[in-house]
Image (cartoon, rainbow, N blue to C red; front, side, top):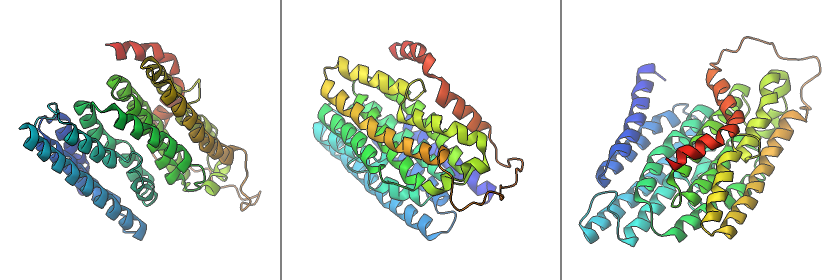
Length: 348
């Protein structure tokens, strides 16, 4: 893609998210979300592959549906209460509709079906943008409206953690595994949203860092499915040794960074007398952990049957920029000791 066009599209992405962040009026927030969607569509379709075009079409249709729902709900709110302000949402009907519209935008269960299919048709770079940056604007709106109907949020959160775990169990395509991982992590964030918004933000940030590391590892490895992971030892031994801890951090195992948000969320849910909810969420984390362990096993403990012993690939200097991967991996693995600092910031 032409660098000038790429710069314009990335600028549009940033501007759309910033407009949604800064808006207090529903029409302005809707406009920011639309700019976001329209800016990423050329990035998704840039390879002109039938799968990329199909993924782009699916993404456009789901985002257009969610945006129409959001516009309808905000107009209904203005009709019922006379308010267009985001923080003046008092009527339960538009609040529920907007919550479901934003759930569709970010891919929460049970309106998640588009996310694995769309992510499967994209390259890792665009998939990374879709899994991280595109979640920011809808989350900013969810944090602002603070839906009072807690049952909907808890139901969405539990459904997402369970479906995110179950859906990834028998996947062999890495991008679909990462999509189901995204659904499960979003479920954890939504569970605690109404009780501790700052904890939701902390979980979102740690999820971004861990997902960045996972996407960059697979991109550097040029692996798209489970079988291709088995050739990793010959390609990049150092990265292959670091990948299982990254995946286990995504699964939330101590003493890695991914354990911190899950630990704090379970603690918060228990404080709110939601011990059954916390138990179901913790059990669903085991489902996710199983497929991360499966990826780790395929990568480190199996040898690919199709490579001969004497045909090791050339050890060329890496042509890709690996500094983001180094920073991402370090933070993915080593931030758990900073939990007291994170808790102190949450209290502030």
